[in-house]
Image (cartoon, rainbow, N blue to C red; front, side, top):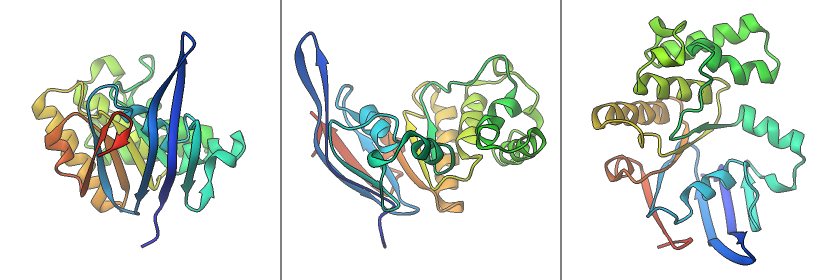
Amino acid sequence: MKPMLHIEDIHKDFENNGQIIQVLKGIDLQVLPGESLAVTGPSGAGKSTLLNILGTLEPPSRGTVFFNDRNVYQMDETGLNKIRNREIGFVFQFHHLLPEFNAEENTMIPALISGYSERESSEMASAILSQMGLKDRLSHRVGELSGGEQQRVAIARALIMGPQLLLADEPTGNLDKATGDDITRLLLSLNKSRDLALVIATHNMELAQQMSKQLLLVDGRFV
Protein backbone atom coordinates (compact mmCIF):
# COMPACT_ATOMS: atom_id res chain seq x y z
CA MET A 1 0.00 0.00 0.00
CA LYS A 2 1.25 3.46 -0.90
CA PRO A 3 1.98 5.79 2.05
CA MET A 4 -0.34 8.75 2.53
CA LEU A 5 2.28 10.62 4.52
CA HIS A 6 6.01 10.22 3.95
CA ILE A 7 8.68 12.27 5.69
CA GLU A 8 12.41 12.07 5.10
CA ASP A 9 15.30 13.26 7.27
CA ILE A 10 13.29 15.85 9.22
CA HIS A 11 15.33 18.19 11.40
CA LYS A 12 14.03 21.06 13.48
CA ASP A 13 16.27 23.60 15.19
CA PHE A 14 15.38 26.55 17.40
CA GLU A 15 17.56 29.45 18.46
CA ASN A 16 17.63 30.45 22.12
CA ASN A 17 19.90 33.26 23.31
CA GLY A 18 22.26 32.70 20.42
CA GLN A 19 22.38 28.94 20.91
CA ILE A 20 20.96 26.45 18.42
CA ILE A 21 18.78 23.80 20.05
CA GLN A 22 18.20 20.67 17.98
CA VAL A 23 14.72 19.32 18.67
CA LEU A 24 14.37 16.82 15.82
CA LYS A 25 17.49 15.13 14.49
CA GLY A 26 16.68 13.22 11.33
CA ILE A 27 13.19 11.69 11.46
CA ASP A 28 11.93 9.29 8.78
CA LEU A 29 8.32 8.12 8.87
CA GLN A 30 5.61 6.65 6.65
CA VAL A 31 1.89 6.61 7.49
CA LEU A 32 -0.44 4.39 5.48
CA PRO A 33 -4.12 5.12 4.78
CA GLY A 34 -6.22 3.90 7.71
CA GLU A 35 -3.19 3.29 9.94
CA SER A 36 -3.12 4.27 13.61
CA LEU A 37 0.17 5.40 15.09
CA ALA A 38 1.21 6.57 18.55
CA VAL A 39 4.30 8.71 19.05
CA THR A 40 5.44 8.44 22.67
CA GLY A 41 8.36 9.81 24.61
CA PRO A 42 9.31 12.13 27.46
CA SER A 43 8.35 15.80 27.61
CA GLY A 44 10.64 17.86 25.41
CA ALA A 45 11.43 14.97 23.07
CA GLY A 46 9.83 16.79 20.13
CA LYS A 47 6.45 15.04 19.83
CA SER A 48 4.36 18.21 19.45
CA THR A 49 6.92 19.74 17.10
CA LEU A 50 6.78 16.64 14.91
CA LEU A 51 2.97 16.75 14.77
CA ASN A 52 3.05 20.44 13.83
CA ILE A 53 5.44 19.63 10.96
CA LEU A 54 3.28 16.71 9.78
CA GLY A 55 0.24 18.97 9.81
CA THR A 56 1.92 21.77 7.80
CA LEU A 57 1.68 24.14 10.77
CA GLU A 58 5.44 24.54 11.16
CA PRO A 59 8.14 23.97 8.53
CA PRO A 60 11.15 21.79 9.30
CA SER A 61 14.64 23.27 9.35
CA ARG A 62 15.48 20.70 6.69
CA GLY A 63 14.02 17.53 5.27
CA THR A 64 10.91 16.83 3.20
CA VAL A 65 7.27 16.10 3.94
CA PHE A 66 5.16 14.41 1.25
CA PHE A 67 1.40 14.23 1.71
CA ASN A 68 -0.42 12.36 -1.05
CA ASP A 69 2.64 12.75 -3.31
CA ARG A 70 2.88 16.51 -2.75
CA ASN A 71 6.00 18.06 -1.25
CA VAL A 72 3.94 20.27 1.03
CA TYR A 73 6.63 22.74 2.06
CA GLN A 74 7.19 23.62 -1.58
CA MET A 75 3.55 24.71 -1.84
CA ASP A 76 2.32 28.28 -1.41
CA GLU A 77 0.24 29.35 1.60
CA THR A 78 -3.02 29.06 -0.35
CA GLY A 79 -2.31 25.41 -1.12
CA LEU A 80 -1.28 24.69 2.46
CA ASN A 81 -4.44 26.32 3.79
CA LYS A 82 -6.56 24.03 1.58
CA ILE A 83 -4.75 20.95 2.92
CA ARG A 84 -5.21 22.10 6.53
CA ASN A 85 -8.88 22.86 5.95
CA ARG A 86 -9.92 19.81 3.94
CA GLU A 87 -7.42 16.98 4.23
CA ILE A 88 -5.88 17.08 7.71
CA GLY A 89 -7.76 17.36 11.00
CA PHE A 90 -6.20 18.55 14.26
CA VAL A 91 -7.12 17.77 17.87
CA PHE A 92 -5.08 19.29 20.69
CA GLN A 93 -4.79 18.71 24.43
CA PHE A 94 -6.48 22.06 24.96
CA HIS A 95 -9.58 22.01 22.78
CA HIS A 96 -9.29 25.65 21.57
CA LEU A 97 -13.05 26.08 21.31
CA LEU A 98 -14.46 29.62 21.21
CA PRO A 99 -16.34 30.16 24.49
CA GLU A 100 -18.81 32.65 23.01
CA PHE A 101 -20.01 30.04 20.48
CA ASN A 102 -22.10 26.93 21.07
CA ALA A 103 -21.11 23.41 20.06
CA GLU A 104 -22.65 23.65 16.60
CA GLU A 105 -21.14 27.07 15.86
CA ASN A 106 -17.66 25.92 16.90
CA THR A 107 -17.94 22.86 14.69
CA MET A 108 -19.16 24.87 11.69
CA ILE A 109 -16.02 27.03 11.44
CA PRO A 110 -13.96 24.89 8.97
CA ALA A 111 -16.97 24.50 6.66
CA LEU A 112 -17.60 28.25 6.67
CA ILE A 113 -13.91 28.89 5.94
CA SER A 114 -14.14 26.44 3.03
CA GLY A 115 -16.99 28.43 1.48
CA TYR A 116 -20.09 26.49 2.50
CA SER A 117 -23.16 28.55 3.32
CA GLU A 118 -24.25 29.00 6.92
CA ARG A 119 -27.16 26.61 6.35
CA GLU A 120 -24.95 23.96 4.76
CA SER A 121 -22.33 24.36 7.49
CA SER A 122 -24.99 24.05 10.18
CA GLU A 123 -26.31 20.82 8.63
CA MET A 124 -22.80 19.38 8.37
CA ALA A 125 -22.02 20.32 11.97
CA SER A 126 -25.27 18.87 13.28
CA ALA A 127 -24.62 15.59 11.48
CA ILE A 128 -21.05 15.13 12.73
CA LEU A 129 -21.95 16.18 16.30
CA SER A 130 -24.76 13.62 16.30
CA GLN A 131 -22.21 10.98 15.33
CA MET A 132 -20.12 12.14 18.31
CA GLY A 133 -23.08 11.50 20.63
CA LEU A 134 -23.85 15.21 21.08
CA LYS A 135 -27.19 15.47 19.28
CA ASP A 136 -28.81 17.06 22.37
CA ARG A 137 -25.92 19.46 23.05
CA LEU A 138 -25.78 21.44 19.79
CA SER A 139 -26.92 24.74 21.31
CA HIS A 140 -24.86 24.47 24.51
CA ARG A 141 -21.99 26.91 24.88
CA VAL A 142 -18.53 25.64 25.76
CA GLY A 143 -18.91 26.46 29.47
CA GLU A 144 -22.02 24.28 29.62
CA LEU A 145 -20.21 21.19 28.33
CA SER A 146 -18.14 18.70 30.30
CA GLY A 147 -14.46 18.20 29.48
CA GLY A 148 -15.23 15.07 27.51
CA GLU A 149 -18.01 16.80 25.60
CA GLN A 150 -15.70 19.70 24.78
CA GLN A 151 -13.12 17.29 23.38
CA ARG A 152 -15.83 15.57 21.32
CA VAL A 153 -16.76 18.96 19.84
CA ALA A 154 -13.08 19.53 19.03
CA ILE A 155 -12.96 16.14 17.30
CA ALA A 156 -16.15 16.94 15.38
CA ARG A 157 -14.66 20.24 14.24
CA ALA A 158 -11.52 18.39 13.09
CA LEU A 159 -13.57 15.88 11.08
CA ILE A 160 -16.34 18.03 9.59
CA MET A 161 -14.54 18.39 6.24
CA GLY A 162 -13.85 14.64 5.98
CA PRO A 163 -10.04 14.67 6.26
CA GLN A 164 -7.93 11.63 5.44
CA LEU A 165 -5.53 12.21 8.34
CA LEU A 166 -6.24 13.13 11.97
CA LEU A 167 -3.41 14.42 14.15
CA ALA A 168 -4.05 14.43 17.90
CA ASP A 169 -1.66 15.95 20.45
CA GLU A 170 -2.30 14.51 23.94
CA PRO A 171 -6.06 14.19 23.24
CA THR A 172 -6.70 12.64 26.68
CA GLY A 173 -4.15 14.72 28.59
CA ASN A 174 -6.65 16.98 30.38
CA LEU A 175 -9.29 14.33 31.04
CA ASP A 176 -9.92 11.95 33.91
CA LYS A 177 -9.30 8.27 33.19
CA ALA A 178 -12.91 7.31 32.49
CA THR A 179 -13.45 10.25 30.13
CA GLY A 180 -10.05 9.67 28.52
CA ASP A 181 -10.94 6.02 27.90
CA ASP A 182 -14.18 7.19 26.28
CA ILE A 183 -12.27 9.52 23.93
CA THR A 184 -9.82 6.70 23.14
CA ARG A 185 -12.69 4.40 22.11
CA LEU A 186 -14.14 7.18 19.97
CA LEU A 187 -10.85 7.81 18.15
CA LEU A 188 -10.33 4.10 17.48
CA SER A 189 -13.90 3.77 16.22
CA LEU A 190 -13.38 6.70 13.84
CA ASN A 191 -10.09 5.23 12.65
CA LYS A 192 -11.86 2.00 11.66
CA SER A 193 -15.24 3.28 10.43
CA ARG A 194 -13.82 6.12 8.30
CA ASP A 195 -10.55 4.44 7.24
CA LEU A 196 -8.98 7.51 8.81
CA ALA A 197 -5.22 7.63 9.33
CA LEU A 198 -4.59 8.57 12.96
CA VAL A 199 -1.34 9.88 14.45
CA ILE A 200 -1.36 10.59 18.18
CA ALA A 201 1.35 12.12 20.36
CA THR A 202 0.78 10.93 23.91
CA HIS A 203 2.21 10.09 27.33
CA ASN A 204 -0.75 7.75 27.86
CA MET A 205 0.67 4.27 27.32
CA GLU A 206 -2.76 2.63 27.53
CA LEU A 207 -3.84 4.79 24.60
CA ALA A 208 -0.58 4.20 22.71
CA GLN A 209 -0.81 0.41 23.03
CA GLN A 210 -4.19 0.41 21.30
CA MET A 211 -2.72 1.94 18.13
CA SER A 212 -1.54 -0.37 15.34
CA LYS A 213 2.00 1.01 15.66
CA GLN A 214 3.96 2.72 18.43
CA LEU A 215 7.13 4.75 18.01
CA LEU A 216 9.29 6.09 20.85
CA LEU A 217 10.83 9.53 20.35
CA VAL A 218 13.87 10.24 22.54
CA ASP A 219 16.23 13.19 22.15
CA GLY A 220 14.90 14.04 18.71
CA ARG A 221 15.13 10.56 17.22
CA PHE A 222 12.99 7.42 17.02
CA VAL A 223 14.51 4.59 19.07
